[in-house]
Image (cartoon, rainbow, N blue to C red):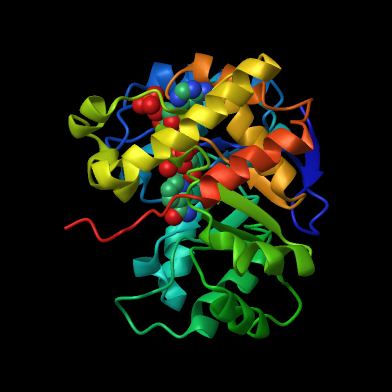
Length: 316
Ligand SMILES: NC(=O)c1ccc[n+]([C@@H]2O[C@H](COP(=O)([O-])OP(=O)(O)OC[C@H]3O[C@@H](n4cnc5c(N)ncnc54)[C@H](OP(=O)(O)O)[C@@H]3O)[C@@H](O)[C@H]2O)c1
């Protein structure tokens, strides 16, 4: 495994993490033993960063992680736990209440990285209200770092001005070869400000791997059913990119998932992909994305294929 520093925190994290949204009804891993086996395999392979959220399975993902770490006898400093408070729980008092509940579910006395999952769109909670609450949690030693997920750069900038001594260490947003929007503002901003960029949906929920036919995706019933990348108009184009990824994978003797994750870490030193996995085999496959690099030529082939398609989110 390769490692990097989380922002400027001094916290050492693996160059890819384990996304834990999969431990929910949305993705279907609702059996604790299965989740434990996935977590166990990740840790065995040196993946020490686990990304979860309060809303994943309405607490189930956090609960599974806390229970598994205990059952597996993992020492607290061997794992970096990142979780998130949803945009609906960001009033000053709710930030503390939500964090207390997360700590209970995770069976720990501190959270390594607490992120705001998305901005408070539906309630008028001022940015400084939740940022000041997070800084207080940091001062109390209940969290070790602050991150902002799905926040545009302008909001990250204003959020940082609310903090007295702390800073935002992590930005998290969607980023993969066919959903490149974060390259316009967020990734350059993270690079300029020594922040880590956690790339969510790094495999485009499996779409860029080309493992599903157009027929298959029409039948999807999980969280992917409504995702624009699986809409036939978009998916048809994504399959063209997947073909290039498959060719590059064959050339390097790697799998498509390994090529995509390698492509992401080559994109920028600040990017930490957090692929979700539904089996220990997928974790093993994803961990094999480390320890080698694509040639510059193949990296560019994928980039050019990706830039030649147009994904639309207007699907009806
Ligand atoms: N901050 C946010 O708003 C936000 C939003 C979404 C996600 N996230 C985080 O990002 C993580 C990952 O994103 P994601 O869950 O959207 O999607 P993803 O990581 O792009 O895709 C995960 C899916 O791809 C398939 N897969 C994984 N590894 C594979 C492999 N080696 N070979 C073949 N298929 C493989 C699995 O589904 P199948 O086997 O069923 O194909 C898996 O469920 C989440 O777990 C969560 O922690 C954050």
